[in-house]
Length: 184
Image (cartoon, rainbow, N blue to C red; front, side):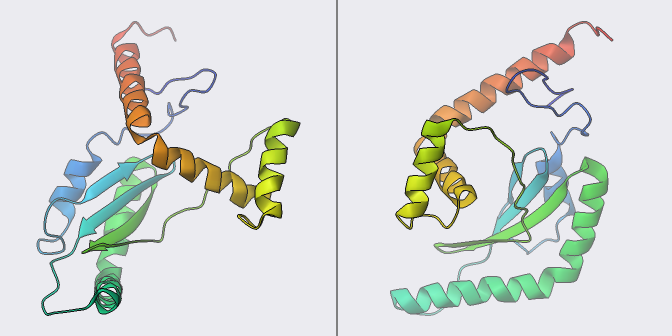
């Protein structure tokens, strides 16, 4: 991610250590046998989230029982690995300057734990506030903050490809900026 990109609507990551090698670091640091493959490592300005797939369940389950068994297996893994995950997170937080969150996948069940909810300030004009207030009045959300989070999740679900392309383009801009002359 380089030196970061400052400007209107841009990333302000200039003061953060690069986390470009975080996926490789976690792949090398995590104990063998925790996951069936390399974990998914998701990075933003505040947090690194590590999500791994647990070994498959054995036995026959109907749909409801399978979901309960998967959730139980994740809970057991969470408890069994707590102390070691805390130590790994402490090391990663020191190295990358970000909090570390954890999650696990078991079959079709995905659970995240210890992840941050970061406040975000925004200014909205009346038409945007009315949208949020409609969602609150309809019972879709408990508050404007919940309504805004719901709207962001909805956009994220329906714009994944576009957002991925945008992130790639921003990363290329960061790379080019870091190769340019230092204006400081």
